[in-house]
Length: 120
Length: 152
Image (tube, rainbow over all chains, first blue to last red; front, side):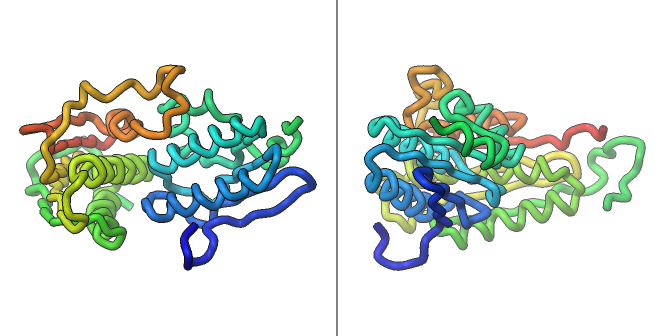
């Protein structure tokens, strides 16, 4: 974990679901992406069976390195037999998921509400 | 708002705006380079989708240059970033100081068996968003072209 600097995430607990929202509008910088990945990995490690909802509501730009971080997060959740949902993805960013076919890998919901209801 | 002629592009009316910079792997440098080009696109009334596309392609090309092209080199080693912008087209050139690479060697990240591999999507996105992407010389120089979509 980085030793200094504030969190790049807003984290809320709803019973057994952890909702994570990005603070940055642009998820492009390598160091920021690393920090985001490590913070979310920490949340996954802290849970026996993680149920994680990641909201992209404030995100305008993201790079393939950020997609890579989301894939690593998905892999870590899978190892723990947890559940990961993505929500509130801007249409331009959703296009990036479609081009890369990652819309097949992730469970993506229009809203946090519908994502929340989809947890089993 | 644009007040350009309604009779289509009048090629060659104005010389292209040409810019060439050295960019190091620092967020301030990268953003400074992007800002000049992106504000040029806005000035020439490129749509918002164009700004998104060009920014993404530049980010991906720079990550490739710094991370792969300059692998093992001093972190301050700069790349040459240049562009040539007209009212309906932009050509972006990014040249690193590395040994070059062969784009054909990049695996297809969209195959089912590769979907959970975290890296290797930059070139795919560059090709998806740009009109053309080509590697020149020994493969350390990428040239990308974006053409403003026809109005409508």
